[in-house]
Amino acid sequence: MLKILNKSQIAHLENEVKISRHLTESQLVSQAGKAFYHEFTKIIKDIDLTILILCGNGNNGADGLEIANLLSSAGYNVEVGVILIAKKSSDTFRHKLENLFSSIPTIELDVQDLHDFTLPFYDVLIDGILGSGINRELPTELQSLITRINQNKQPVFSIDIASGLSCEGTLPKVAIKPHYTIAMGTIKPAYFLAEGVDHVGILIFARIQSFEECLSQIKSHEFWINPSSAKKILKPYNRLDHKYIHGIASIIGGSYGMSGCIKLSGEAALRSGCGVVYLHVPYNSVDFLQSSLPEAIIHPDDFKYHIGSFENNMRFTAIGIGPGMGYKIKQSEMFGGLLDDNKTIPMVIDADALTILSGWDDWPRRINCPVILTPHKGEFERLFGKFETQQQRVDAMRNHSTKYGHVILLKGADTVISGPDGSVYFSNTGNSGMATAGSGDVLTGILTGLLAQGYSPIDTAILGSQIHGLSGNIAEANWGKRSIIAGDLVKNIGLAIQSIENQ
Image (tube, rainbow, N blue to C red):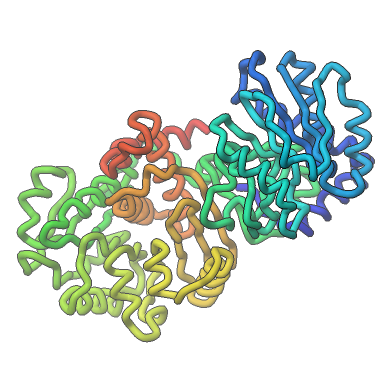
């Protein structure tokens, strides 16, 4: 997993690299340009496309000029637009501009000229206008240009960070909405903290080799997780394993008309490698679940249309509770009794169980077992209160996990996970098509299945988030974002795990 660094840490890193490697700023920009070029050309392979690179006159623009030369050398059709934003150009920018190939068509504009500037034709645009160095409102002329860029349909690649977005994620009125952001050697908080409109697109990490040694020495409690991170957690299978070695999970939930939630969770737990899965459900759901998921053991509740009793079998190695359960008095009493009784079996608490939890005074102290809480934004606010920004939510998660030892997985476009040691993990694996009914129930099943197999709560949350997101990406490739349903995620869990194994 990759460390997330704030602006001052990045400045310190770059300075240390220049000193230890005896590099000039211009040489560092050359390395960054090569890293961008390496990732960009994996995606854009047609050299006949017209590539427009817009460069401000700071170091982000210097990156753009370096990239222009590299692409031109490879035969790409490149044009450059230079926008004089700062009163004085950076030394590195001036050096790169002096060394820009004369064969590359170039136009130079003052900011005041942008109102009358018509963007030339392009197939792909590379955004090197600002980088993360601006923390004030953009000139209206530049806002106008960015708005026009955002209205076009051609793909946009941002160099390191979308122009207008700060390193810490604060947004002005207008910022570039790239299809891709290629992160240059470091991962920034902005990729995960900006809210509202997507100003990241697909995040791609461009490794800069000279950063590696210094980067390893910088301490960070925030990390970007991806499928490669998950591979380090995934346990190998042994030829002599049997089903009980792979864990015994119980998933509690369901009510009249909500049996599908438990089917999704139960099947997801099984597909995640759990050896035995019990489903505790209202007894009117037994026939449906027995016929639709014969691999699970169905345990009927005493009540017909809802659950209201549960006998904890100490053979269980994990319990998941909440999907489709309801949150009336009977469910609340049953859940409270389970928490009072259970001191050792790890649990995943989701959906209606979170709603019950939020209604109790001093609810964190009711939990005495290892736990993963999986709220979406609304459930999170019921548990922890309302917050203005994602950064405030992250801070609240970190404080809670550190104080009580609970793992929290905040669901959303970017998954956020907090652990008991104060570390926070961000993931943007997955896609917007996964915002569909039942998707959270699938995640609950995956997490419960992994917990049952003996993964720690924090490793479960990291690995489970990647399996869930990759399942959605495979579904998107087959059916498109608009047509994904939760059942598609379950079908692709095996392929997602294979994808992690093959990283």
